[in-house]
Amino acid sequence: MSITADIIQKDSKYSVPVAARPDFVLARGEGVTVFDTDGNAYTDWVAGIAVNALGYGDAELQAAVTAQMDTGLIHVSGLYHTQPMVELAQTLCDMSFAGKAYFCNSGAEAVEGALKFARKHAYVNERVNKTKVLSFSDAFHGRTMGALAVTPKPKYQTPFKPMVPGAVLGEFNSIDSARELIDADTVAVIIEPIQGEGGINVASAEFMQALRTQCDEHDAALIFDEVQCGLGRTGDMWAHSIAGISPDIMVLAKPLAGGLPIGAILVTDEIASAMSPGDHGSTFSGGAVVMQAAQVVVNRIANDGFLEHVREVGEYLLERLSELNSPHIVDVRGRGLMAGIELDIAPGGIVQAGYEHGLLLVSSGSNVIRFVPPLIIQKAHVDELIDKLTQILETIDDGD
Ligand SMILES: *Cc1c(COP(=O)(O)O)cnc(C)c1O
Image 1 (cartoon, protein in one colour):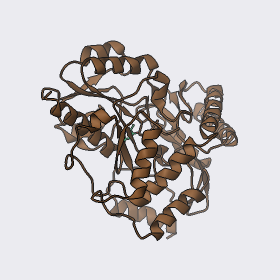
Image 2 (cartoon, protein in one colour):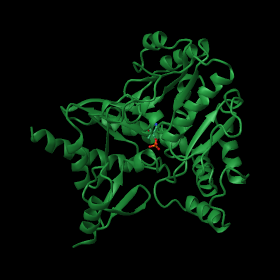
Image 3 (cartoon, protein in one colour):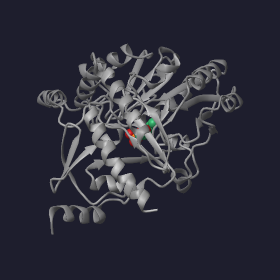
Image 4 (cartoon, protein in one colour):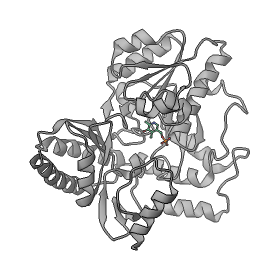
C-alpha cells in the first residue's frame, strides 16, 4: 500500500470522524503552496482556515520559535512572569482600543472567556439580572458550550442541547432587531464585523454603531469577535475600524500566532477592573513559544506596506472574482483578503474540482466559496485562481 493510502486508511480507523477529508495527505508547505505526499502542489486559498497569515516556512517566525525553544522555556504557566507574554500584551493594547489583554488557546476559548468577563463585570456592579447575551443570525463563535450557545446553527446545536441559557438571537445587520432585543437584562452583545463561517457577511458601519449606542444605553458589553476577520485580513488591522467605534471586548485567535494555537481577549481597563486573581485562567495561557510567534506575526502585519499589500491584492481578488461569468454565481462579496462567492448550487463540487486543479478551497455557510489565503499572496496567484475557477465553472455549467 502507498504511504498516502496507508495514512488515509489509518485516519478512518483511529480518528474520531468529525471531518470529511479529501483523499490526499499534506506533507509540507512553502510560501502560499502546500504539497502532498505524492508531490502534488496546491495553491492555498484556505490557509488552515484563515490562520497562516504569513504562509508556510516564514524564516523569521521559525527563528523566533527556535530561539525561544533554545532558552528551554516552552511553558511555565500563568503562575509566573515572563517577558514574551507581557510584550505581546503591550503590543496588542498599543495597536487597539484595549487597556489589557488575556491569552488562551483558541477562538472558542477566547469567546468563553469574553462572556465570563462580561458577566463578572455585571456581577461586581450588582447587576445580577443581567444574563442575556445577544448574537446574530449566521454567527459562528465556536463549539464549546458557551460559544455554541451563541452560534445559532441547528446542525451544531441540536445534538448538544440543552444550551447554556441566556442566548438571544437577533437578525444580522438589522438595527431594528438590535433595538428591540437589547435591554436592561442584556449583559453582552457579540458580533463578527465580517462573518466568516456564516458566509462572508459584512456588518454595516451603521449596524455596528447602533450596537455601540444600545450597549452604552443598557450597560451591556459589546464584544467584537475578530477571530477570523481581525489582524489585517480586511486590509485594516481591525475589521471594525470602518465603523469608527470600539468594543468593550475583542477576541482574537486564528492568525495570531502564525499557526500555533492561541486565543486572546482584549478588554478595556473598565472590564479588566472587574477581574481578580482566580476568576479565570488556563494552564497554557501565555506560553512563551506561542507568544514569540505571535509577536513576529503582529509586528509583520503592522509593518510598513503590509496592510497596503492586503488591500491591493484584496481589491484585485474581488474585482477578478466579479468578472467570473457563471449562471451559478449569485453574489461576490467581502473585504481585503476575506472574500466569498455565493452560488445557487452546493459548493462541494467546486471544492473537489479545486483539488484536481491544484487549489485548496473551502466553503462557508451552505452555498458560499470563501477565500481566506495567507496574507502574503500575490496578484499572480489571483490570476491563477481565476483561470482555474473559470475552467471549473465551465465544466460544472456543462454538467447541468
Ligand atoms: C473559528 C472561529 C471561532 C472559533 O475558533 P476556534 O479556534 O476554532 O475555537 C470563533 N469565532 C470566529 C469568528 C471564528 O471564525
